[in-house]
Image (cartoon, rainbow, N blue to C red):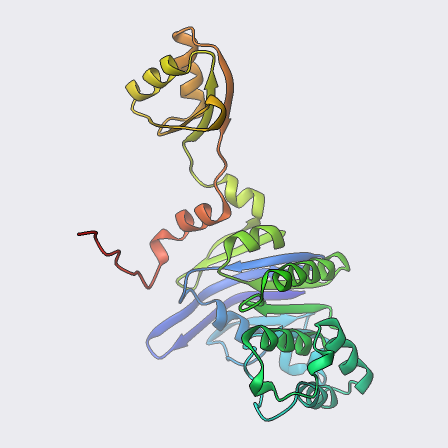
Length: 305
């Protein structure tokens, strides 16, 4: 388990993390989300002792990371997959890490096999593709067979098979009772992987909840509606200020009116409804809404000429 309490970190005058507190409990995959510059990488670096907080505490299984003589046995981390000497082979890289933590050669072979790199174990890491480098980074995180793991963008550079494999792997670790913290900008993938979410913006906590609760909490006025008299229903909705678009099988997608208002309009007009389904936002939509005021870097959309 990871426990973060009042974590604050500054880089000069810039406040990267601001009084941040949350837990990463065992038995769940915790998704760690936030816009670029939100403080995710700084927080993850603080967990493994690479950044010293200005205030607050971070513990792994009840102790600071630096208190462990063999930290790879307590927490595995993938923060930067390319942090490998390019002249070393995959096996040499993992063997060096293993020896520094009292881990035997057999485990090196096991993790190479687990991530699918056995056949290229003798190749220099500098020749690896981005996806192969990611697999090597995951192998390093698994070396000590730890109960707590953190992964920063673990599917970056992986093909579809590799993405599914990573998702299945992370969820299997949580099912074994391990604590898993994973960050990603791929919202669709996070929706399939995470059980709960910690969302931050400008270094502050914005949400600490389940995926389902986070998406349900996003404001939405999109409703899928189907009626016996579709044209009349459309007239009612447009007249009430809704934007209406056609949907397959004769349904209409209404935006701008809540489902209760649509039901009341139809009832008063004697229009029989066959369907009235509020559309739950996707994780991406909910994330964009919740973090809209904390985005640090915005690109300008070029206008068509």
